[in-house]
Image 1: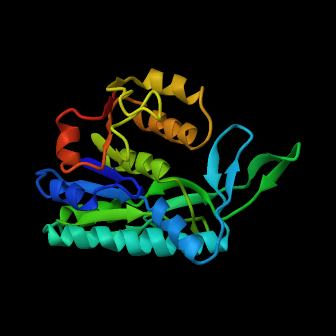
Image 2: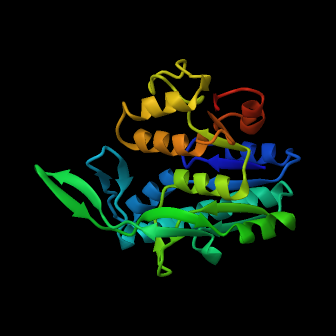
Length: 263
């Protein structure tokens, strides 16, 4: 079984991605982002995005109630239903869900994020957390009856509240729960680049140990993503492909060898 993670960038070719998926003979689950759509909507509503960087160097979006409302509108609302509509047009019988629905993704709310501000260490608390378990019975019920789950944030905390979380961490939990053999991540680049400003610097193949060493040498959003990829690949059961989602055959090209292949 495959898991397709569709990035939330503006240039991702959603129509071509779904058309490619319609040609696959194996079942798959879709997890998607909507970060650009979220930022555009927040701007229209006059809401500013706040980025927190923890003392350990990991960056995340500060999720207050306004930010969570925008996530529900953009991720589990507009973008989720856009993808479901494209699936239906390609005869993929998709069901759009957030991690909140049916407690599909059970999370644990963060106790607080330690950050440095003005030379002081502060604890910032918000409506975010980490995924801890997957309602695999619900996912299997859908898959066994011919439905394609299309998943996104928010997830649910211990007390039933909606919280923000990282889709990369959700992908790892789903891959483990469903014994996924291939995770294909579509981004706005040819794959993992040695130099983010140079698309010719594609790293075609990468080992888990190389992932870990790269994670230790960077900061910000990429640091968090590399950590999530390292966790996803641990155990050696899951093949990961990071590929270009901007093309006319993004899935077909990736499965044929394009992008960065991690094993």
